Length: 78
Image 1 (spheres, rainbow, N blue to C red):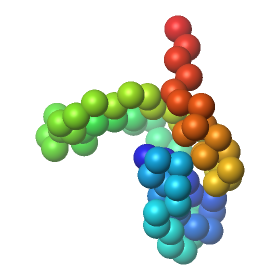
Image 2: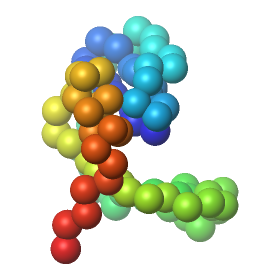
Image 3: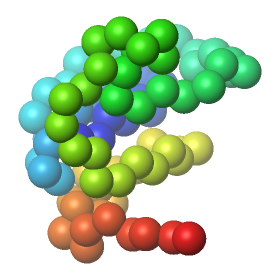
Image 4: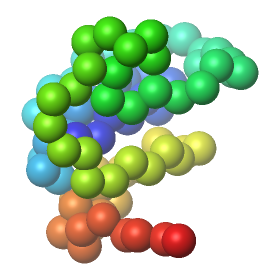
């Protein structure tokens, strides 16, 4: 699953394919809060499953980039 915000649209990709999108406007707000993956950060609403990989990017990926990354599979770095 990949979520992309490019400053004008929100897009949701699942398995490398665009599944939903909508118009959105506004600036992203810089925060010093930690990023929580798999729960709400407070220990509530925990995800019950397996998360193979997590990646954050400072730019909005194109549909082509997302499809290529999905096909290549997770890139593990140590």
